[in-house]
Length: 433
Ligand SMILES: *[C@@H]1O[C@H](CO)[C@@H](O)[C@H](O)[C@H]1NC(C)=O
Ligand SMILES: *[C@@H]1O[C@H](CO)[C@@H](O)[C@H](O)[C@H]1NC(C)=O
Ligand SMILES: *[C@@H]1O[C@H](CO)[C@@H](O)[C@H](O)[C@H]1NC(C)=O
Ligand SMILES: *[C@@H]1O[C@H](CO)[C@@H](O)[C@H](O)[C@H]1NC(C)=O
Ligand SMILES: *[C@@H]1O[C@H](CO)[C@@H](O)[C@H](O)[C@H]1NC(C)=O
Image 1 (cartoon, helix red, strand yellow):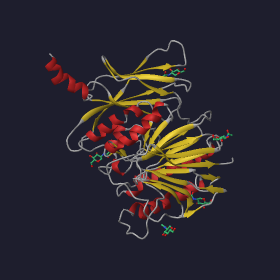
Image 2 (cartoon, protein in one colour):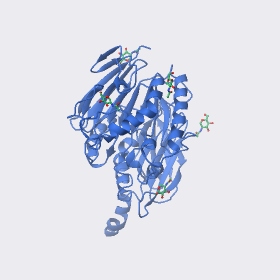
Image 3 (spheres, rainbow, N blue to C red):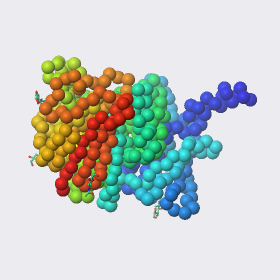
Image 4 (tube, rainbow, N blue to C red):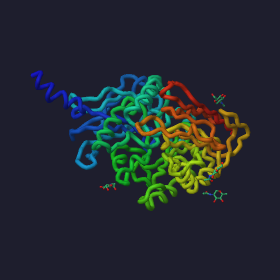
C-alpha cells in the first residue's frame, strides 16, 4: 500500500495533478471585483470558496463555479492543462476576504486578499496606495527578489504588483515547464495581491504572445478584446496605464499598434476629466523611452535598445505623454536600474526645485527603468558609461521598486536591492496643486 502511494499517488499530488496550483489574482475592468485564476491538469469541475473576514458577523462561505479553458502550454509537443478562472463580485473595501480553490477533498491553501479594488466610474478612493513595480523576473536568480518581497508581503505593505513584461524566461520554455515553475514560485504573492502584467519581448515567442494571453487575464476593454496586452485602471489617487511597446518594435504587428494608440488617446482624455480626483498619471511599458547610451560605442554593442528603439518610441509617444502631463513612465527590458530627470526631446527639463532626490512641480514625465528583478541573462551596464545629462541614478543590482502615493501632492519612489537587502535610491515628487 505504501509502495502504491509513493509510486502513484504522491507524484500525482505533488505535480499539481490533483491539487490546484499557480493560484493568482488580478483586478478586472469593473469596480468591487477580483479575478481568481489557477491551473489544474484535469477538467474536473472546480470552485472558488470565499468569505469576508474581520468585517461582519457570521460570514458565510460562498462557492463560485469556475470557467475553465483548455490551454496548450507546449511549444512543439502538446502540454494540455486547464486554466480555471472566476470573478468574485460585490467586494467592499472594509473587508479582507479569505478563499481557497478546488473541489472534493482537494483544496488549495487558504489565502487572503483585500476588498479594495480599482475605480472606473466612482471617484471615492482618495487613500494612499503602494505598488510593487519591476520588469524582467524569472525563476532561479529571481529568488533574491522573492526573498525581499516576502518580507514586505508579510506586512501587506502594498496593494498590488505590476510586472512590466519578460516573465519567467520564458513562459513557453521546456514545453511550458518554465512558465509553470515561475507561476508556482510567485504564488505566495500572486494568491494574496493582484498580479498585473503586460507583455515584453520574451512573451512573443511565435511573434504573437499566445502563451501570455492564455495564461494571464487582465482587464477587458473594447480595444484589447480580452487579450491582456494593454489596459488601464484607477487605483486610489492614480491612473495606471499598462502599455504594450512590442507592437512598435516587431515586424508583423500591423494595425495593432495604431489601435492601441487610438485607445491611449481616449484613455488619456478620460483620465484628464478625472484628473481633479486622480491627480497622478503613471504609464508602464516594457521597452524604455529613455535610457543611458554610450555614444562612443557601436550601436549594436548592446546599445540598440537605447540608441534606436528608445528614440523610435519617443517619436510615437513622447508628445502625447507630454501633452497630457503624464507624471511617471516606468519600464523594464534593460537588466539594470536607471532613474532619469524630467526630460523632453532628449533634454532635461528643470523643475521649480530639483535636488538629487526631489523634483518640485516637474514639467515633463520622469522616466524610470526597473528591469532587474532577476533572471539568468546578462545584466546591462549603465554604470561604467558616461551618464547622459538627464540621468540621475543607476545600479546593476537585482531588485525592484515601490511606488508610494501618499496624497494629492506627494509621491515617493523607492528602489530596493534584493542582493544588499536595502533601499538604494529614492525620489520625492511633489506637486503643489
Ligand atoms: C451583488 O449585490 C447585488 C445587490 O446587493 C445583488 O443584486 C447581486 O446579486 C450581487 N451579485 C453577486 C454576484 O453576488
Ligand atoms: C501564434 O503563433 C503560432 C505559431 O505561428 C500559431 O500556431 C498560433 O495560432 C498563433 N496564435 C495566435 C493567437 O495568433
Ligand atoms: C501636443 O500639443 C501640441 C500643442 O497643443 C499640439 O500641436 C500637438 O499636436 C500635440 N501632440 C499630440 C501628439 O497630441
Ligand atoms: C541626445 O543627446 C545627446 C547629448 O546629450 C546626443 O549625443 C544624442 O545624439 C542625442 N540623441 C538623440 C537621439 O537625439
Ligand atoms: C502628503 O503626504 C506627505 C508625505 O507623507 C506629507 O508630508 C504631507 O503633509 C501630506 N499632505 C497632506 C495635504 O496631507
